[in-house]
Amino acid sequence: MARKKTAPFEYRPELRMFLFKGADAFLQAQYLRMVVEGLEKSLGEPPSRFDFDGSTTSLADLLDELRSYGLMQSHKVVVLDAAEQFVRKESNRRGLEAYAESTMPEATLVMRTTGDWRAPKLEKAVAKVGAVVSCESPDARTAAAWAVGRAEKAHQAVLERSAAARLVDRVGSDLAKLDAEIGKLAIAAEGDPATIDEALVDDMVPPSREEQGWIIQSVVLGGDAGRALKTLRSLKDVSRVPDQVISWALVDLGRKLHEAARQLESGVPEGAVGKSLRLWGPDTRPVLETARRLGGDRASRLFNTAIRTDEGLKSGRSGDGARTLEGLAVLLADSCR
Image 1: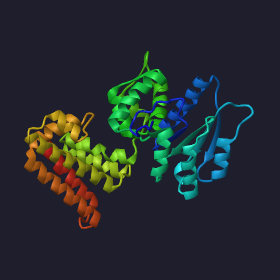
Image 2: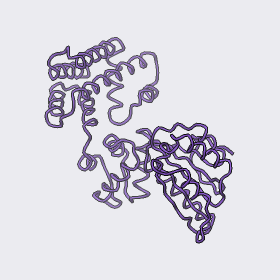
Image 3: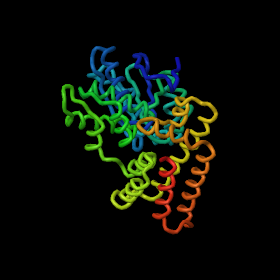
Image 4: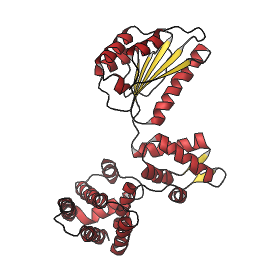
C-alpha cells in the first residue's frame, strides 16, 4: 500500500525501497538507523550495508549489488546518497522505476537526497513498495520543543524552554547542529540534573551575523532610542553585520507591528494574532502591546517609512546609509516607547 509523504516514518519489514528527501542530516541518519535496526530485529541478525555515491555510481553497479546474492549475509541494505544526481540521467531513473516493479526480497534500497529531486514517476513507484519520507528541518517552534526532549533523552540534561528558543535563534532548526550544541552545553551545565539556561546558551553559542542583526528588534521594542543607537553601531562596527541585514530586521519589525495592529483592531484574539505572525519567545508580548497602543493607522505609517528607507538604501538614494539606519531605529524606538 502506498504511503503518503507527509505520514510519520514507521519502519515495516515488508518495505523494500525508501526515499528520504530533505536537507536535515540528523533525520536522514535517524531514519536509516531505524531501517537497519528494524531489519536486524525482523531477521535476527544485522544486515550488510553497501554505500554508493549517486554522482559517480553507474546503474549497472547499483543493480548488480541489489540483485546479487552474498555467501555470508542473508540481507543487504544498499544506500544511494545524492540520489537526485543519480536520477538526472534518464536511463538511471528508468532503471530504478523498473526495479521498483520487481524488487529483490533479499535487499533493501535506501535513496537519500538533499538536493533538487525531479523524479515524480519514480517517487510514486517507490511509494508503492516502500516509503517516501520528508527529512526537512522543522519550524523554529517545533525544533525548540524537539531540543528540550533531546536534551533529556540523549544528554541527560534539562534544557529550559526559553533556552531552547534562544538556541534555535542562534543555530537554526537543523537538528544535527542543535544536537551537537546541546551535547556541548550539557557537558558545561551545572546541577543535578545538569540544567541549560539562557545565560549558558548566550555564553557558549555565539550568534551568527544574521541572527545578530535581528537583535535590533528586541532593543527597538524596548523603546530606548539611545540604547537602540548604541546597539546598531555595535552591530555595524564590531560585529560587521551588513546594513541590509539590519535594515530588513527593522522593516520586518514594522511589518509585524502593522499586521498585529490591524488584526487586533478587527477583534482577532491575541493568541491568534501571535500564531499568524509566528511570534514566539520574549518579543511576543512587547509586539502585541505596542501594536495595540499604536493602532492600525500609525503602525501603517511606520511600516511605510521603514519600506521607503530600505528602498533608499538599496538604490543608493539615501546617501549616508549609517545615518539613515540610525534615523529609522530612533523613529521606531520612540514609537515603541
